[in-house]
Length: 395
Image (cartoon, rainbow, N blue to C red; front, side):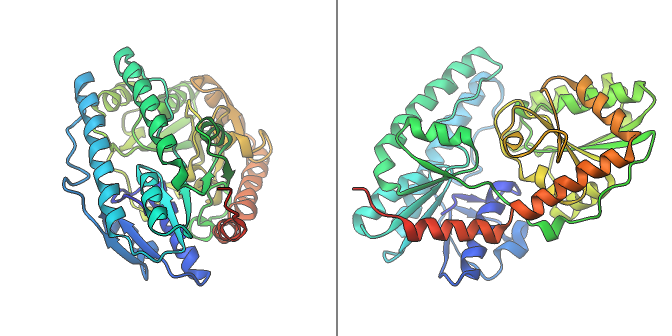
């Protein structure tokens, strides 16, 4: 079960990769969702039995989050719609599944009722983003309300946790969050499709650099660091361009304006290209072929498939030391770390490596090998199957 398969982002792609992997391993798989756009996932959705169970109100029928009140209304409306979607899907599930895989969102609520009807079923919750996780917001009122919502969601999860047998997370922070509500998790790092993104390691071009950033349009992504770094580099005489693939899922006009204003302040002009509507995989691979550095400047603990896809494409990764990605990489060996909100560090690293092709190739090659050797979909699915086979009920 994945409630929303209508956005071109890492989470639904991960879900479909796992579904395809389970089919490849000889399992019968049925996919349930409230909204599916097959055009977004042509290769990943082929040959899958996908059943769309729409809720009473479509998932995209939430009010635009204008201002503080608008953000509150949007959050509450989204909670109601997704809860309704989970309920509808739960009522339509076949009654003889041996394993129920629930992926993010409100899907965890389905397990308890299903196990009452079929106690032998093993439920797996892929908790990549704990719904009770709170990240600090810039607006004080929104921050307090977000914190309150996280408390409410924590109690909800406790109410439904008896319907969850196995929890999968992608980093230590999510694991610790789960423990606070009595969920003991298995860390499985999210893989990437290495052959799809593979390219030869870049050859640096002295005096010319392209920086690439990818992620949803959110202040937590800290994209301004990339723009400021580009401005610093240009002033140093390194001709620097920026591609930002930052899809605006939540109509975040305030942050969009901030980024555009910074690009003007730094005199980037046509050297700053924004993709606020996102891009297809084909266009993303084209951008990866043009870029020299992938910059992942997030201020919060977060995993990013796009960063590892960039490493697979032969690009050198510059990553904020506070992210989950930094937990599995080694600074100076297969990536370069920097402190978030320090664009001067990014600029300094880029300027140094731009004039050191051997050092660039060494780190980028090690990063590419790390992705190939460590982040395999076949290995991930095999671990999921092993956890299910080894599961012993404690109740």
